[in-house]
Length: 271
Image 1 (cartoon, helix red, strand yellow):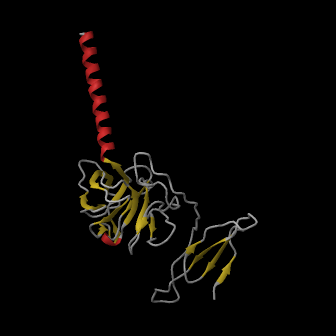
Image 2 (tube, one colour):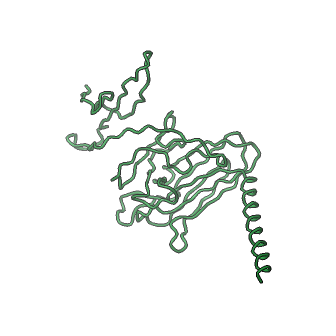
Image 3 (cartoon, rainbow, N blue to C red):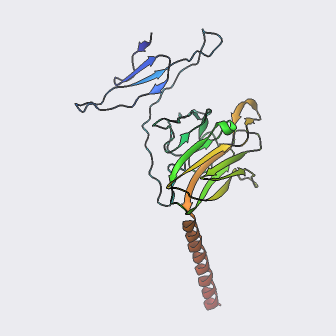
């Protein structure tokens, strides 16, 4: 039997049962919003049946999927859109697998492995860009992926940032990146005080949609707690046509050349 408890707000019902899920509020024929249900349960994996996990600070956040940028085929490549994160969430948020599900707590991305990955914020971790990033845990058992729109037989560049989360994760830190039929490992080798480094993988698309994916090569743990899994941080993921990259580089080179010529002319006039 499930035990029912009153919800903190009238439209939500919480119940204790043998599963955990989140419902999506829908509208009935009358146009009124239906009440969704949230369920939490203990799967009963403890040796002592009289103890179990503690549940506290429940939050519900409406997620939306950002539109891909005009020059980037990846959706939510900066990982800024994701689950609710409490201000005191010093351990980040674990994202379990959502393979085969219609909804992802990390819009645009699929956690397609058996183990979770960690969603981290810049208040408690070192984040390469913006306020959010993903820390890859559990080696090959912690994979994130996305299908991106591509043009067959066209060359693309998969660019991203890999670094350390600043959580005392023991070296070496490395990411395996996939783009279509290409795969390459990238090691985080900091220079000076750098906490992250850029990485790039060039590939030729074979279809109108191409899978890009990442996982940690090693099973890392923290130096101050050998039982806590950690890993490299991935952020700022982009898939751009190589011609676009070359065009941008040409424009940048042209601007530099223009300013050098202008500086030379001004120097000659003043001299």
